[in-house]
Image (tube, rainbow over all chains, first blue to last red; front, side, top):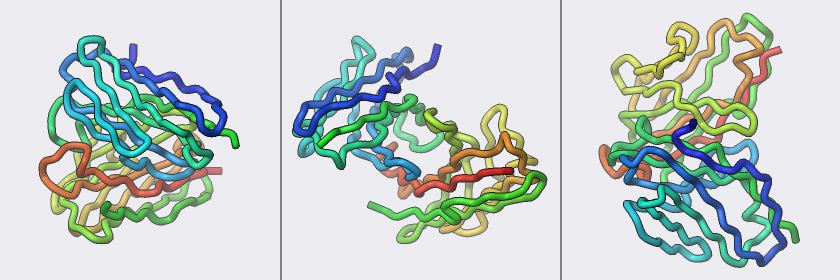
Length: 113
Length: 118
């Protein structure tokens, strides 16, 4: 079993829809949670960064962490075709970047005009 | 955010040749850079941690003699795939850390280099 599970998709939605992307994890030691967006043939770009349980909102994006269920979500409101990309969740046990990140496999999102 | 540049963005080479990929932090100094490999429709897998002025730390299962990493300055790390074979074909991504602490917020990724070995 992978430490971080993420449905690969593809997830296809019409423009304007609310998108829900999710990851589950098995290691309760994870405390820092991130969502990255990766366009085709590009490197990942950090979208959201959260610590422990709770919600965080940034524009059309909302990140939600439920540590009791070991479940994190990213919601995208009013989705746009430009949101079409692969979304990777990542998490770490401590505050040390890079070598401590565990990535999900990514969910491919397609927003159709 | 900080900018990390990778070069080349794509490369095709013959089996048995060596290929060098550069990772540069353009507007900050990075004492630590990371190299990842990503196969199609799969996630990023950390290959090694590159520290300026010292030897890289490789993840389990990554051959250090095949994937040579050099971090000679605070703004440049290079990954050389030696004697490349078709199974080495992949998307190689580097990342650089801006600060010492701050976790994932201080990690910026390059745009990746696609290697195809014929």
